[in-house]
Length: 162
Image (cartoon, rainbow, N blue to C red; front, side):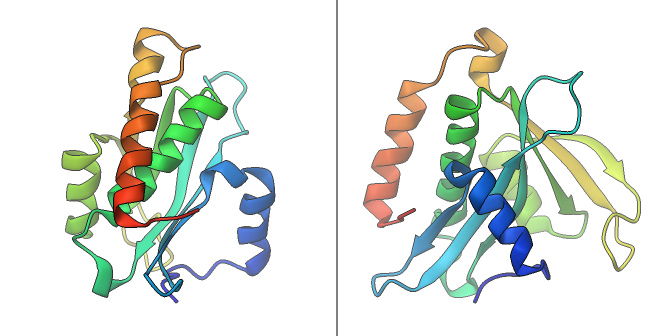
């Protein structure tokens, strides 16, 4: 398994049943799961525009540095934007997780929104990060066909499946 979190199984089922478009897995040639992204739409604040949240992202160490995490994230984000009309997506990352921070800031263009002190159970701080979707900036009611085509082609090239 590559599940790094200690969520109860019902938490995964809640995501799967509520937002099936936002849960994606990457499989190896033999069908074994090598990575996943678990995401949701935030429902708690009616005063904010619709937005998503990345709950968890993981790729097995043996399969890292192949673009799998990037593809999983882009596919989930594309679904947030096109299906749910999200304006942005948020996530939390440990301040000490330099590899993930680099992925989010350099590759996926997330920005630090704030720092949440003691966010993790062990007391470590987290960066609260956001990525605003380009269509939300230009036209909040329009999906991105080009982004969808790019993700679909990249997924096909890496044999990543949902």
